[in-house]
Amino acid sequence: MHIRPAQESDRDLLLELAERLQEGVAPWRDPEDVRRAVVGWVRESLADLSDPDSAAFVAEQSGEGVGFVCVSERPHFTGEVDTYIGELVVAKMAQGKGVGRALVRAAEDWGRARGRKRVVVDTGAANAPARQFYAALGYEEEDITVSRAIV
Image 1 (tube, helix red, strand yellow):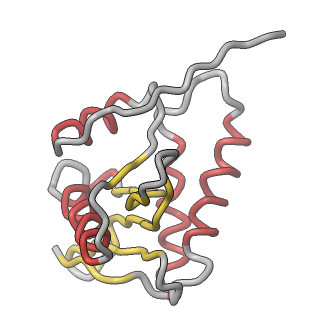
Image 2 (image 1 turned 30 degrees about the vertical axis):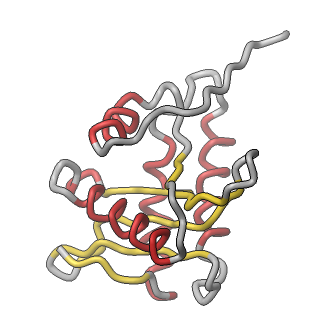
Image 3 (image 1 turned 180 degrees about the vertical axis):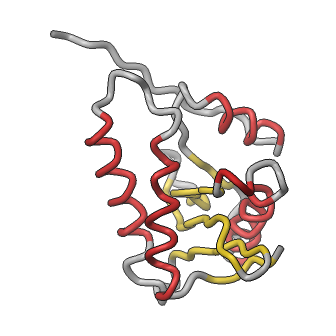
């Protein structure tokens, strides 16, 4: 497996993979709104691949893109600036083969090189596989969002 910076020529593949970001979203959210949002997030993350304050990395196996991670910085309410994983996606056929771990490591290395002390990532409470994946890497749940229908 090889991890490399994303290129303009990766855009279509990454947008296709972005569809996986719909998995694990709370069931009361409109699926079309979710799809539109996740594709928008990835488009925004890939808008300027030359931006020094963000990065995107692609995982390749046998020359084929099998995953990606988008990373930037985000201030915590305490004022500390954290490395932020905006999107992490692994193709279904490459799941469980170390691709996600390698991409997270690339994001952590990017943040470490910028002097950051923490990496944060948001995932849905209903996304049990993602939560288990991050926990296995030593990530701890920090903030919880709760919601309630008021109709």
